[in-house]
Length: 84
Image (cartoon, rainbow, N blue to C red; front, side, top):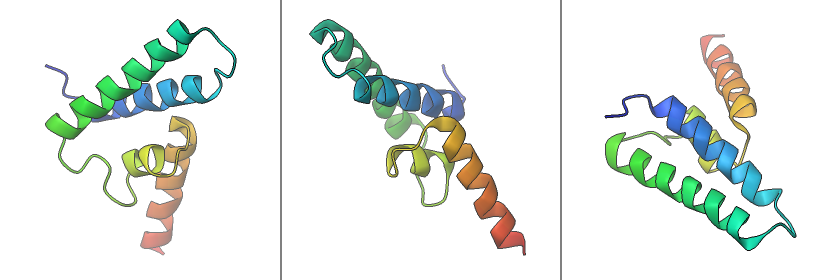
């Protein structure tokens, strides 16, 4: 069983990026990445409660549409603000 939500969030972000950049590509290509995105979302929703809570990496990827790296950066900046 997959136990690492961050791995799935990273794969969700990658698939989202590929779908949004696939303008004019083959339908099979976009269908594949849409399927990957939907599968990651389903697993995250069913197995990892709170994976997209406000302020989390999952929130920034899923709700804000950020890349995984940008979401990690936003999450870290948020933590620093809270500590100050």
